[in-house]
Image (cartoon, rainbow, N blue to C red):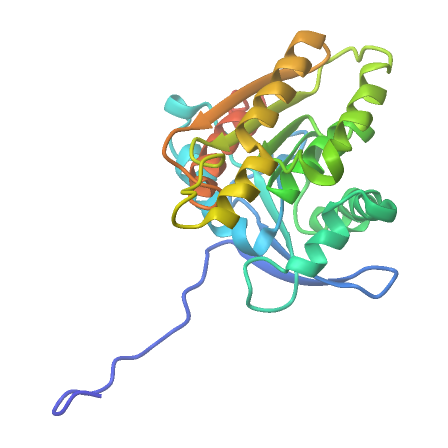
Length: 277
């Protein structure tokens, strides 16, 4: 306290209308679910749902973007939605080891994680508010972006919209391309799934003089080129309603807020009015 002045009352900052839920998988893995429930009455079919992996890092920014855009539906076309962040115990925004286990297709890890999300995790959310499982979106970044692509290719009917932010297409010598080819051989769906692929404009360029190792990693990952090629192939296939955005001047981390704002508009835009009772 300052001399002659009482110490101010300090209180934790809380996000209105949000819940933090402890969740344990059948195998004993612990998760933290962050759920934001709109205070408005639910539409007749339930609220649309925006699911975020790496929820500890992405949830607050995505929630702010969703609430701002839903607050001006005449401008954005966005209606209130349930925002679900899937995270892990602990204070770190990213849990490097856990996310590798959950987000990468190694040994079926991504598929097990997807089963958890689509199963008991969403069931937990349904105990809090009615949701529209026909209007669910998956939003993720980096390894999570790769997870979004894997989800689209392996479970094309589970989510209506997918946002692959800075997807790690380079992983395992672009093994995701094999999954894509299997997807492209499936019968054409009656309604094409939607996909937004984003990347920062500075994600492929590094200063070779200042940090040659980082420059070499960026050259190997080829984030911009891989994202553009993925979007081009999928758009040309006619099987995916695909959009591709490069955020000029943004790197692999600074691009996250821009990606999340665009993700909200992409996933929830056009829902205003259509979901009202």
